[in-house]
Amino acid sequence: MNIPDTELPRIVIVGGGFAGVSIAKTLANKNVQVVVLDKHNYHTFQPLLYQVSSAGLEPDSIAYPLRKILKKHNTSFFRLAEVEHILPEQKEIQTNIGNLKYDYLVLATGTKTNYFGNKAIEAHSMPMKKVPQALNIRSLILQNFEKAAVSDSQQERKAALNFVIVGGGPTGVELAGAIAELKNNILPRDYRDLDANMMQIHLLEGHSRVLPPMSEHASKKAEEFLKKLGVNVHCNTFVQDYNGEIVITNSDLTLESKTLIWAAGVTGAPVNGLKADALLERANRYKVNQYNQVEGYDSIFAIGDIALMETEVYPKGHPQVAQPAIQQGKLLGKNLLRLVKKQTMKPFTYNDKGSMATIGRNKAVVDLKYYKFAGFFAWFVWMFIHLMSLVGFRNRVIVFFNWTYNYINFDKAARLIIRPFNK
Image (cartoon, rainbow, N blue to C red; front, side, top):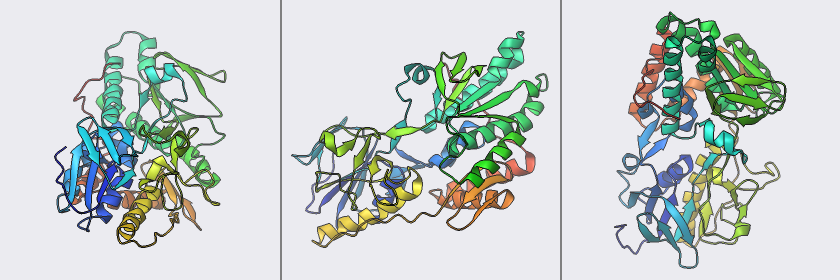
């Protein structure tokens, strides 16, 4: 793997998401050697993936090279690798590019799409967890527009213009709103020979309301915004089967659609090698103590979405969003430096800064500890926080320019089929 030998303690971080980047930054230029491993050479700002899917942003606006993040970290290294197995007795990991010894191992592998064991949905639906998957959705949406424009069959047109999104959490709600804006602002201008009213967007949620993790106020306002945009919202609705053409649900609802986007949940992405009781099977997350140590191991830690820390406030673990990952990464970085100095670690306490979701132009909902609001101001707050959270000045400038252009012109400039998608 060509990592230099050193007398400094070696900390290996598996994963370059919010948690992995947070701890790597905390350990920058300290008296430790840091090795970051990821199967992609970039960090993805996942909260804006839906805008890549809906042609609002190019992928390089929300992705940032991991080597660039580490370029001024003199004792840090990055390797493009996939970790295949952990050998805790030898304090070693096996990867597809070789083995590597560690003094401390930090697992920040995040999550993957959860299909809940439904193989038909896994085979035919479109997930949206990674940049390539977001590009696939963008291509498929635009290809469906093109197919509908040349089809002589009314039924074929309807199926091509029928979009089903499963999962009414923030990802599903935001994506439904973004696709609705394509229907309302782009379709009538770019495809004048198509009847825009033929395009239908269906959002399916198994819970009794959309945005179930947020307040009832946020759910109510989000559903109002979605319906104003023309989205068909179906609560208490589960998808039972999908063959690429027909969506079958637990109710009387059956939909013909060429596109089913699966945003109905995630599950942990653990690495093989640790004891079975270190992993909570139902959540596929590592059980960790208040210091993020994996149960049964002193030198192996887990942070972010893959970690499950049970507390009185969060008996099922912290929410699998960016803030817990970032906060755990910062504290664990400091705690590892304390361990190196033979000092006592500090326990983790999550500072919940609130949650938010945008539904479209001038429409968003925000839940803070003491305040809940919706509408234009919430949308402005959402934009500002997401803009400032992006990694890299260039990305902030590009996203700000794109948002300003889109707002003034009611346009989505990234509607390009660069890489056609074939199921």
